[in-house]
Structure formats: structure tokens, C-alpha cells
Image 1: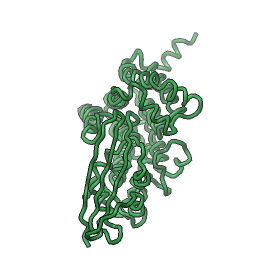
Image 2 (image 1 turned 30 degrees about the vertical axis):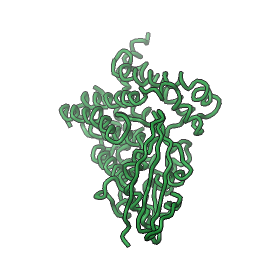
Image 3 (image 1 turned 180 degrees about the vertical axis):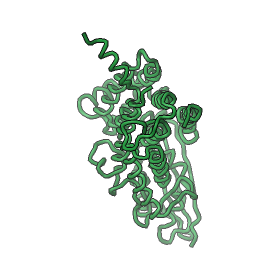
Image 4 (image 1 turned 120 degrees about the horizontal axis):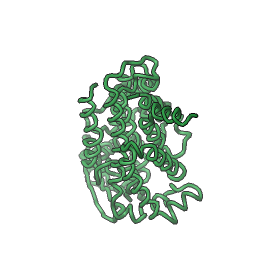
Length: 130
Length: 266
């Protein structure tokens, strides 16, 4: 790669990529330890016409990776660096929760409070194919 | 311009990359989501994965193969065997595996992957390598690597320019989570969280200038190393310190140091 290619590479890694993180996070750049979020996850499962709240821990057997940690913390609430990715994939988590026996519909609510005290609630529901 | 600094950074960062993705790293404190299997990201039986996009959801066999490819390519990159393709393949495999668990995304590994890509696309394989490849554009290779490291500090300071960070409340929150280790940790994150927060932003914001101006470069490298040593002694932010110290090697200029040494000799 010549100097022209390196210039393009420099613009991409030094400007475009860090700015792009703004699309999913609270600010551009590498946020790492710059903030934190207190969060709580509510899960409601419909079995036909009957609805019951369940602990997010009940979803752990169907989950992988870091999601398992968040689900374990989810009911009581926890403090983590960020739940931006969980919020983005809340619909996927609801779809995953359909693995629970007899579930016909899943409703999830993610309650967040950031380090500035701003509150945010995100909801997602999924109809399970039975 | 010498590419030795790039080669040292390649060796060090390649080793950190390879180790970070094995269970060996689990023994280190402060590791976020330590690997449950021998290789990080190895699929967990029949459990469902949530990919960053549904189209990127790979089979368990494909993810396992990528884990092996990432490890082999990372080691080849570090050793300087087929440096450029090895680095590109290692980073591509690493991002493909990260895409299988976007909820576990970590900026530290993201910076590490970008660093490997910058070195792989530069002339980091032209020296201290098993299969050295002649340098094509050493000057721009060094410049882009240095600009990347400086930009990491700049973009780390930006999200901290907020009231919650500057007041010290974020550091105090991490202290409450058990991050501050020992007497130094409780001093910096507890009693003097505000001062520590202000100092961190001031150092991170000034490092790009210190590192990019030739006269202050060595001072910048020393300050950056001291800051990472302090982070390791207190919060231990995964392998961030190891990644950044590896990348800081691109600022070393052995020819300038040896010139100074010969001038100082009687």
C-alpha cells in the first residue's frame, strides 16, 4: 500500500470509525469507562390469553455470551458500562425468549438511567410461532 | 525512515491479540467476559446467538473455524510470516466472531483490531520478520500508525468532556462497583475521584499533541506509559494498557536514539 492508500486508511481509522460510534452510543469516540448505566429488564410471557411476569434469569439457558450476564443482573437491576447494544437487540432477545415452553408472546421492557440521571424505557414484543 | 518501531509494535500487539483470545487470559484480573473455552468466542452448544445482523449469523462450525483461523493468523502476524494477509485475515475473523455477540462488544478489542489492521496495511512486516517483505512506503506507514495512536487518545477524551465525568461521579460509581484496587485505587477513585477524572481528560487530550510533535514525543510516550501503568494499578481495564503500550512502540526511533548515544560518547 502506498502513501495515497495510507492517507485513506488514516482518514478511515482516525476519523470515520470513531465518529461512526456515535450511531450506536451516546457520543462519538471510544467511550470505554466514560459513563455507566443503571438498568433493569422486565419480561412478560403470554401463554395464550394468560400473561405472567418472569425473571430475565429464566432466559439464561437460551442465551449466549455477555447477554447471559445481563439477564442474570436484569431482574434486580445492575450497573454496567453500557446497555446500548442490548437496547439495539431487544427485539432479538424477545425472539430468543420464545424458546420458553408454551410462550405465545413475549414482552420486554428495558429501564435505563444513565450517569446524568436521564431515564429511558425501551420496549419490544414478539409473537412466537407455535 | 526506519520501520523497526512498526515491527516491534507488530510483535507486541500480535502477541496481545493472540493471548487475549485464549483462555490463558482468564488468569489476568480485569478481563471482561473471560473465555469459557480454550478460544474466545467458541460457540456454546445449541444455544441461540444474536448476531449484529441476521445475515451475519454463522453456523457453529463456521464460528469454530474462524476462532482457529483468528489464532493462527494472529500468530503469523506477530511472527512476521505473510504479515499483511495474516493481519487482515486475523482482524476479519475477529470481527466476524464479535458480530456473533454484539452485546459483548468491547472498545478495547475494537482498538486492538484497528491497530492490527493499521500495522498490517503498513510496512510492519519489512523487518524483524520470519518472511520480511520490502517496505513500499515506510514514511506514510509510520505516519498513519502514529496518527492512529494519537487519535485513540483524542477520541477517548471526547466522551469524557461531560459534567458527570468531570465531577468525578463516574469514577466514584466504578469505585462502588469494586474497580478501585488497594490504597491507591481508593485514593484516586474514591477520595480524589474529581481530580483523577480531570487529570485523565487533561492527559488524554494533550497526548495527541505531545506524541505528534517530534520535540515532545519521548515525553508523550513516557506520560502515556505512566497513565496506563496507573490504570493497571487501579481499574485494570481489560488489556487496554497492553494494547496501547504495544502501539506506543511505533513512536520509538532507534536511529535517533543511537545518534544521540554516539554524540554523547567521548
